[in-house]
View 1 (tube, rainbow, N blue to C red):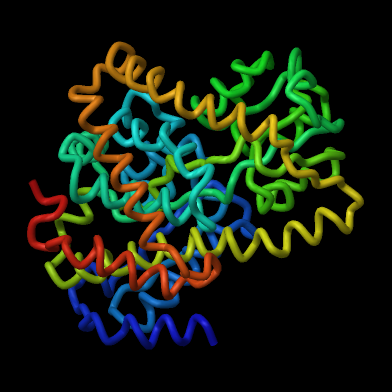
View 2: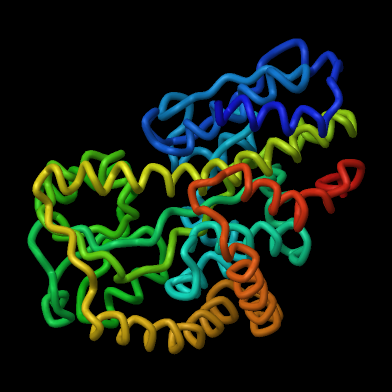
Length: 379
């Protein structure tokens, strides 16, 4: 019923497209996640909407066409038409968007939907406020149409960690630089390991902990190798997600109406990724507890120390993206991103974190309706 409602609402916003491209072959939507994970589930919702509302047909690929590490190059080279890109995996290519993603711990407090707040801020920043971000995606033969973020990050460990002192000496898998700095701040050792390799790394003792949202504890079967999850630390989200990047050559071959359809699909993808993770978190936490895994809240000491880290880390981010990645006007860009995060925290007050349609309407009003299909991604 939820999908029917989404289809009915969005169908009113688009006309049927009839170009040869839309009719000849299905769009390939690719993610490097397992079929039970949120990204391919969200792509299936997008594919169903496209079939019902346009002449586009779409086929979803989950961990079969491209891995997470291969997706960006796969979109660039036309192996897939649309892909789910994790920009921190390509720090040199996507330093402009990664600046925003690296600030994701700004949503550790102040919102009941941290992933929605961060995704709203990043999508608005990339599409409407960051020409340099657009240039980076163009250089990779891609058009950015969607964002997404994990649920709040927890510390997922083979053995319980309840105090700051217990992090010291532990090897902890991280998925983004900001979380690596958090680990090092408290005396641990960061390990940069792809999500697809977390299970082996934990089971073989390569790492003692990983940082993920609770849905991915289940999606990657980590509940079979861990005993303890600390909720509330480190907090923040993984926000370096370009959930619906389109091959630029394909994009520029389409009509304005076809591009408008894909812009609408981008708003749906952004909404469904975030709401999907929040819905999955509810079931995942029940499954985790049923497995007998302890879920403990971070102590006040942990929370206070993390908040101190977030404030101090903004200086590190500014310095690194200036000197290491050569990003211009970093302080100004960080101020814009901070303002957008604060804006989206306010916009999401009272919004059910599991309600994708309410979030999509907000995204459309604030961002996607402002994208001109005749000019966006066409320069």
